[in-house]
Image (cartoon, rainbow, N blue to C red; front, side, top):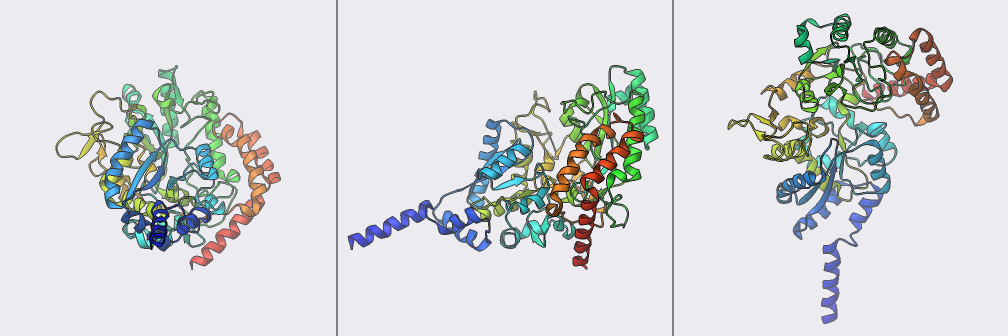
Length: 505
């Protein structure tokens, strides 16, 4: 009897520690998780009073100490609601993401915006967990928030792998201009509507402020927010030229009139001294806070306030295109559950709270009240930085687009009280590409994709910033792309798109 009792106690001890749990071992190694298996494991963990550790990794700068404090505040809530303790990590980039995923480092929820090829590439590499069963059991509240056409942007071959975040799921294209300079020159931003208008303003800035660069990159290395309203169909190597059109014909972007006109305009502006001379080589990411007046920007509600918080200056946004949306805009910069996560059930429960619980969402997005933000008054309508803190020097930066649902968080001072309603109106009014939801699989033409990307890196940035004369260099660029296999890519992408369209009927 004593021996039998000892054996029973030993078995119970192993079960409590989880060391030999076959469900956990299988889920952690294969990536083929099921919600039922996760639920059973989760019930055991909660019954034993043990918290499940979850690592959540997203974009934006934050100090380690601040992340730890935010994690502790989130854990106070999630420990009671779903039996989870949370570890928040920030500063995600492509190199860190690749290292974490390939090394098997624990990550349970991750923003995939830094991963080349997005969710499609992650699925091809076996790094993403299927979500259909998990969402069915733990994410119904979240599903109710996501428009059906947007949800398609997280599916590969009909299987859900990502849930589009409720950020800016559409965009318009244009420019951001420093408001202080416009005021000094007596220019009303409402009068700036076309490229010719923008050109005239840049000329005036160049004449009045010879030490300032009229037009600068959006980020280092010649970064430029896209100004042409095309659907990039995953990688720009074969696009739908205009999202506002019903055409589903895949074309080589670099052969289009839209691209040629952009290059010709930028070459002219460069010849006139309106562009930062080392735009293609600078390593600076915050030029608008120092030597720059204007850059290309994605336009959305609240963008001026977002930029003010980042650069410490007020900006006027000049919209050139109407709002539009395609798969990468709507489904990009969202989260997934890595296949290495040992507890996808708990990850889905936490994800659901990030979408639906205002307190938890606010902690992830904005950080701690009193340290990273404070209410402006007793109405709790707006928040601002605490007294004495520089808005650009917070230990936990607010990068709202990098989290699942900023639309249930407070609005920062300077924005409109109905900002999130404006988001909804903006996205509902956007034109959807006829290929919204299409996911490109480049595997059949991977060699051509690699070769073409090498050609693009040689010509594209220099052409976009007017360093090269398009009359001479654009034909060379196109010919080099053809030699590298761009026509094979366009044909393969067209075939996949046609099949996808047929399957939707």
